[in-house]
Image 1 (tube, rainbow, N blue to C red):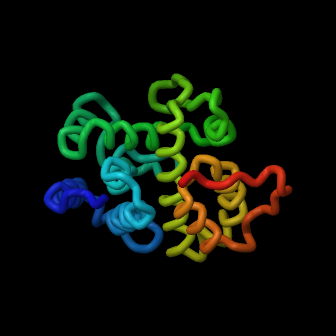
Image 2 (cartoon, rainbow, N blue to C red):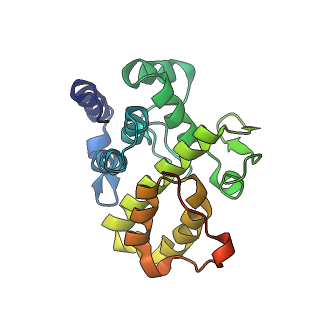
Image 3 (cartoon, rainbow, N blue to C red):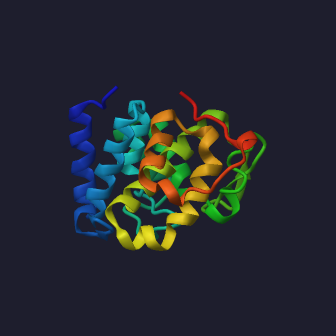
Length: 199
């Protein structure tokens, strides 16, 4: 289901006002990257809340991209939530707050802790929260791999291992995109360890 065009235009206008079109990013500008990530998620059939989160996923910065458009404080979060909805903003905050070194290894496990680098806390995400985070992570990183030979050369194998670990959380279209993009850079798995992506 596509996002409401008027709301999408309002979000892009906010990103413009925050300077996203002037921030350099692999493949051009940060705004261009954000729009591509949303388009990737839309192509996979993601619900509107996840698409909006994809469009705004770097608003608070991330553990891999320190430049933030907004501070991750209560007033800024409330402002963004008014525009994109509370559910989408929650996904944005979770993506931005992730301590990747501490969280990536445990994300596929139902009892694995998610570490919030802003608050210095940890919690166990719900299955839906894990799936949303995994789908957004893969959409974000696949875009970088597709537009930047440098990113692919430096991080392709490591991201292939990450995506493979996240496979049980991914939609079938997301996993197909991983295979199409990385192909031979994906690690081989014993047959008993291969699990199909969710539908």
